[in-house]
Structure formats: structure tokens, C-alpha cells
Length: 305
Image 1 (tube, one colour):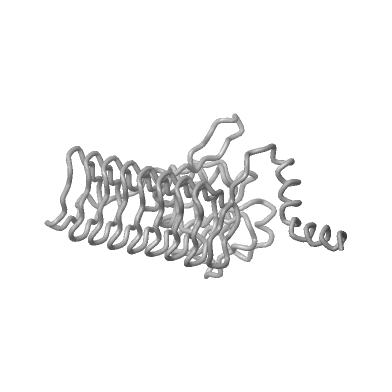
Image 2 (cartoon, one colour; image 1 turned 120 degrees about the horizontal axis):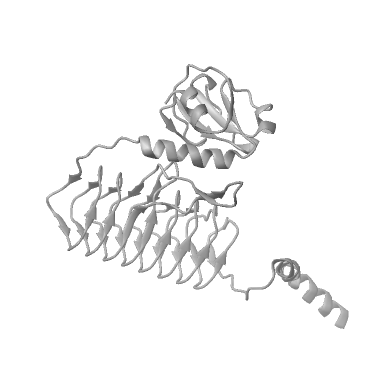
């Protein structure tokens, strides 16, 4: 799409080469030629040749960027949502799927366009595999699961209505993976959601957009993993664990059932985080004291002495 056409369709300002064409949207971690990249944090400015890249950013940040072609808006996230809709409607797909003969498919299974499925794969009843998904060898997907569904990315517009961010990535599932019944694995917003080799997933698990699950990780039932998390290798995640967005865990981590993970886990080991829900300001005060309990205990013991 020519940049001039994009400016007409989205309320946005532009400085740069008006003849440039945009083929796709790419991430700042995986920039592609002739693409648009969304950047609203100066910590994540891609180190690339700026001639064939267009950045979407804020008016304030545009003055700090050494780029030739910049789209900018007071609400760049809303503009990004509108642009994803355009590229979603313009996307072209191959109509042919690649399925090996030794794929066992249950009843009422839906397989959309441009799906690749490897050897010795079993797909249960009522499974939906959305477009552009890739599934490796020796994979089992139990009944009712949806692979490649649209992620839950939204931004509120000036009329207080939700504008959906259309997801242009896909889901990549490795070899020797087991996925239980009624799971949902969302496709990536731009880059892909990835389930690495040897992962096992119980029933009723939700894995959001852009998540990467490290190899041989085990995830128990009713776990929810929010967007852009990066789970290490050989993690064991107990039932009903909630992991907030953009969390990273190292390899060989065990998370106890019903825990909430709201910060990165940087060392291997077993972790538990369970606390009744309270007003946020009260929780911040409680959390502060919890982190100091060991020092308070030492102080009280010394006082007794």
C-alpha cells in the first residue's frame, strides 16, 4: 500500500518520502523491509536502515527519532488499530493446505487456509485450526480446541468505543506437543505465537497473542497466560495460574497452583503467589510490608534479646 493511500484512510500525519510503499506491519524486534513499525517507547527503537521503513509514533517521540519516514498521531495506538484492520482486509492467502496422509481428523473439524500439519497428528472432534497455522509432527489436539483465534487486543477511541487491533501473525506449534480439550491459543499481533517442541497442555488453557512457551513445559488446567509472555524451557505451571502480560520466566521454574505471576521470574525454582484480592492502593501497602517481614522478625528477635 502506498503511504499516500494510508494517510487518506487513517487520520494521521506524515513526514518523509511520499512515494514509499508499505508491504506489511513488522515488529521492532523483527523488522522487515518496506514495513510499518509501531514505536511509542524510545527504549525499543529498531537499529535498522530507515530508508525503507516507516515508523508510527507520537508527536513528542518523532523529534527524537533519526528516521526519514514517520507517521505520528496523538493517539498512535488507535491509529495502529485502524491500520491493522486495513492490512487484515488486504492480506492474501494461499488457498492450499499441506497435510500429510497420516493425520487423523475427528468430526466437525474446521481447517482454514494456508495451514501446514506434519506427520502422525491427531485432531479431535470440533477443533478449529485458523488460517496460517503451522503444526509439527507427533502432535495431539483434543476436542473443542481453537488454534489461531483472534487475540484480545483493543484500544478505546474518542467516543469511548472499543477499536479492535487486528492480529496479523499466526501460531507455530512444534513437534511432540499435546494440547488438551477446549484450549484456546491466539495468533500473534504481528509476530507469531509459538509453542515449542515437547510442550504438554491440559484442558481449558488460554494462551494469548505473541506468547512463546519453551520446550517441554507442562501447563495444567485453567491456566491463563496473557499477551507477549515468554515462558522458559521445562517450566511446570500448576492449575488456575494467572500470568500477566509481558512476563518472562527462566528455564526450570515450577509455579504452584492458583498463583498469580505479576513479575519476571529470573532464577530457577518453585514459586507461589497467593493473596486475597483487595483495593489496589491497599495491596501496595500490604506488599511493601510483606517484603520487609524478614527484617521485622530479625528486629523483634534482637529486641527480645
